[in-house]
Structure formats: structure tokens, C-alpha cells
Image (cartoon, rainbow, N blue to C red; front, top):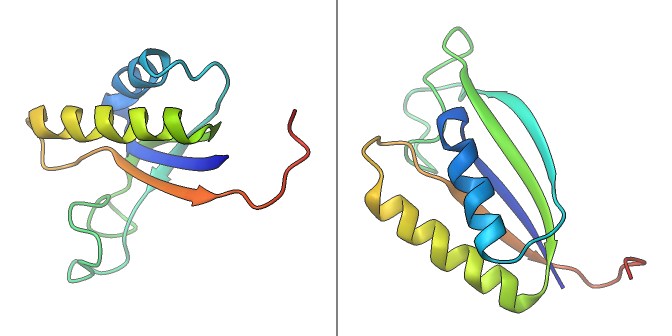
Length: 104
């Protein structure tokens, strides 16, 4: 089982939901968040949120428990969506292995 964390600017909310549906993800958690980075030079992850606290970016965060196959589908679809984006900001996705769970 994989635990996926997806973040994006709010403008991509519908796109992310479409990707999850296309990959047959039936349940997920969703939160609206305000994203920012503390230094303009902080480029560990390029194009991640706005420049400073006074310039927050309205964003969304999704949490998904998924099979390996679903996770692969989500990665494929996110990469495809990012390749077509007109904005510098992209949909960000990380995957963590779940060692133990009581999820049935």
C-alpha cells in the first residue's frame, strides 16, 4: 500500500480530482491550505508556492491510500498533466510506503 500526498495551487483542484477518479481512487482526504516559502532563494523544490509570508498561495492538499497500481497511475497522470500546464506551478506528488495499517 502507498500513501500519496498531492499538493497544487487551488486552480488545479478539479484536475487532481479528475486524475484520482481516472485512476479509480475511490476515497481520499482533501484540505484547502495557504502555501508559502520563507526565502525567494529557497529552490530545493522549484516553483513551490509564493515568495514569502506576505504572498501566500491558495493551495490544496490531498491524502490518498492507494495500491501500487493506483499510485503508478496517479504518477503517470500527474506527470502528463504537468507537461501540459501553462503556469510555472505544477502538481506536486510524493509517495510513501505504508509498512503497517489497519485499513481493510
